Length: 612
Image (cartoon, rainbow, N blue to C red):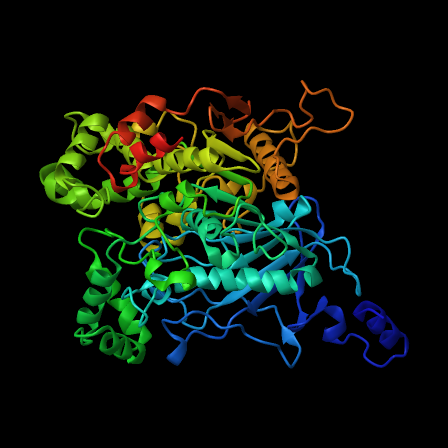
């Protein structure tokens, strides 16, 4: 007898009329019994079952700080999964909030539109494991900015995940005392929880798509490369923790994907908080005893200029041998086909770099420093140092000249500045990664896109709304706009920026509108409707525009054909109301410019070509 039937019987007997336990959705799993909540979806008015704040690992506090996560184990009592989980402890420079979150933060949230009946738990839906953005330093799986209603209305299950951030997630002394990659291992632990428990909530455990933007997109790609997902093989097997991946504006080739000076940053942090640094053991013993807030408050002192460079990120831990999380540089793993071969949907937004540029240009001091001391600050801004290239200053000069010529940094040159930052941190790493992945992929397909259409709102609008300093500026009428973009249709004036793709896929509680589910509605709603159809098709069947029985092969039932990105045929989908697959490589001449630079990620180009 199901819990619904039991509640009905109890109500008929007049024993527990109105009892809260019977009013709430209830799921019984091997890990315990969970009570959830419900809400009505934004457009279709469907019932959504929500189970929030479920711990998937033991709290990483005290002796478990700076260690790999441990399974939470079984809940002996009924767990009320209706509380909003706290974000992981971090310094929030993004929204100007200072110290935010808690160390006890390893929770996930399950959103589903059906709870299957026992004992067979049939009719479950494909699962999206969503990993948040935040450059490894900030963010949360449940911060209220995005809700998964659109995707749930497309009949997929969505599970959002917290993982440790900053030093708590990625500090490494590059030895057994602090191996690093704790945040990645948190993600893997969450995938293991999904594998064991997902189907009881209506979420398929044998069709899991890892999806994210920025650091979440990088994470999705790194998880494809990690043997910890049981993926160091040509084909997925019954034990693989993921089966498809979606990377928005971030891949394992991104400059921020891998730390190349992890031990240096660990030593710097230790000195700031007053810990001894003679040995890794002394260092880590002290950090484990240090107040967590004191550690977080030390983060701003690690930056050399503004919020650069990124002090903590995943590390290559080859020295761990078979226990390595990332056993080699990503381009080496792909070159040697040591990755999980799964379908991959990957792409960028046309103006991803605007996210960073607008932050710099609104600060006259930062802008002036770039104009007068480029040799000092340019390499830092572009993430160039001796580990990235032989001569960081000369390379940074070459990049600036290519994009800005002799122009100064400012609003008059902002489009060129945005293009430079977009290409450095988003477009070229994505182009490089997808070409290598397609070249060495033996099974399945890669699908690439570029979002060029600006919707009714941008993530920058949400960011400014969330930041108390930006809110005050807006109220006083002094919020910064960009005159170079004033004739464009986007309200914020910065083009199609970082995370803007998510607003077509997720409604936001911070905005007072939802996109219509209609191909005949306004252009923005058309783009949203099309993207949701393509993304959900990929999640369900690995192909965003599959051929349907009864349809001619030259006519798409989806309004467009998204041709796969394969070696020799570098198609990508241009996302706008027209939705056309382009067979002309994206910014080919500019990508050749980046390929010619003496960057770390380019050092094996000739070796790779010679082996083809």
